Length: 422
Ligand SMILES: [Fe+2]
Image (tube, rainbow, N blue to C red; front, side, top):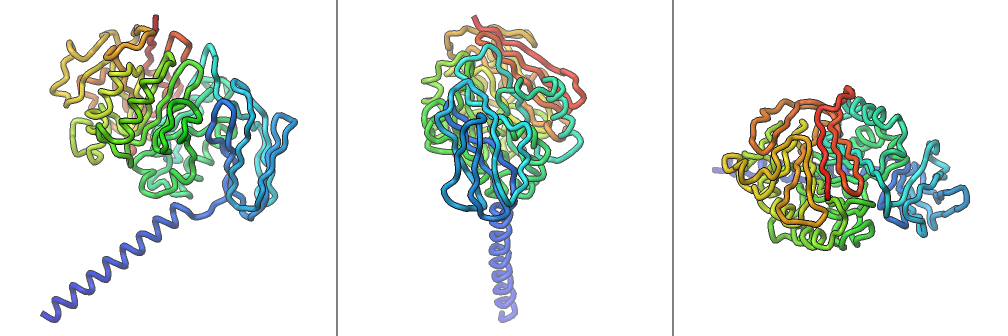
């Protein structure tokens, strides 16, 4: 009896020590200080924020538009400086000044959000968190597509799992800030959280997202979900990993209100866990990913249908997959009835009304092969196209057309479609 008690006590102490050790490891990985080059955040029509980190506490400053100089008020190693009074639809050159960090100030340009533009281009890439040859080639293929001219990209979206394997500060420097450093000098990082990012607490520490509707839409009062109004489209970013995914949860309630007031011609929603996938994750398995894909399908796709969302784009499965225009399907694949759920059967050409019409169809895309490609079965009726290929998505949007391309790491456009609105 005495021995049994002693063993139990020893196990208990070991469990406590493991728990305490684990807590300190997670805290260290999440908040360890690292130098970091300046990156753009909180892009709005009139403001932009630069964040950077210097080895020593110092007062930083920014010069922009060859005219203006703004300076911080107190010295710190963590820098965050917001430029205000900017004009919409405008790009500004800028330079960040530091003494203890050698800042690369070549080719630094930021743009405010556009209110009007005839053609906008988005680069949307998922599961980019592995510093790999595939990651570099997916990025290079995009650069080649735009003739190495980054002014041809208006917005850059990251679909989660942005730094493998655990979203630590070190992994963020190695897997995001270093490989994309030229893009980061010019484009705001709009990102959603993935399951790997959520293993540490760095994601919401590194990034600042709108909570008061600063970039468009209605105030969300949370960095975990927000929207962005850009010329012809309304973009909604959701947290399908750590936020309540229930039908009457705060995120779903906010989403319905936000979409109800949206008057843009196009609506795009992005989050990490796809409602439909038969790639390296299976949406028909209710336990896969802790039920997150099932919950997003059951509780959120009805909101997308009701408010006539055009495109839903996710990552998580390290493949490319796509549906046709579909609506009202919240169940498993065995309940999918093509006659009932597919709104238009053509694979590459769709038409919709400019007037928002409930249940007129959403196209679902899985775009999770930004740094690796896994195999998939690609045999569920919701998704007509599935490829085990590394790549990313380019969207080109005009007031009445939305064209999508899946561009592989070897420069092949392997899938494409266009929606035209009348
Ligand atoms: Fe994931």
